[in-house]
Length: 141
Image (cartoon, rainbow, N blue to C red):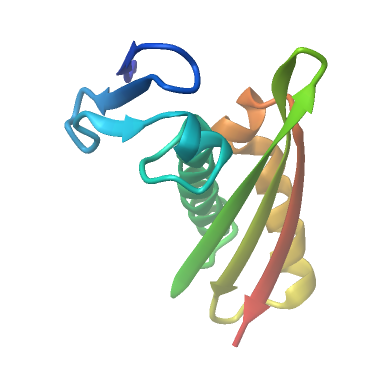
């Protein structure tokens, strides 16, 4: 399976602007630029999209692993926070903090934690990223 997206950019780094699109048109010429990436300007940015991808991937992977262990979640809510820091002359994504809250009937906290931590390592997006990935997973009642 292959998925793709595209980006267009015009102009310089600070005064330029770009758009990002996905083949499925979920994103269609979504604007991005210096202000949306490094300041609080309107539009999206690559780090936000990586965070969305990681949160979505982790939630689905956790559902799979819970199912493999005989549990079905009522809900799984995951937030991913991507850290972009100055690195020499450029920038690097240095960390991703995952925060997950799940409601899973009949599971104890220790079993949930073991599955959640294993899922952090096994999630396909986690495998892709070289940044440090932390997880704060909590079972809610």
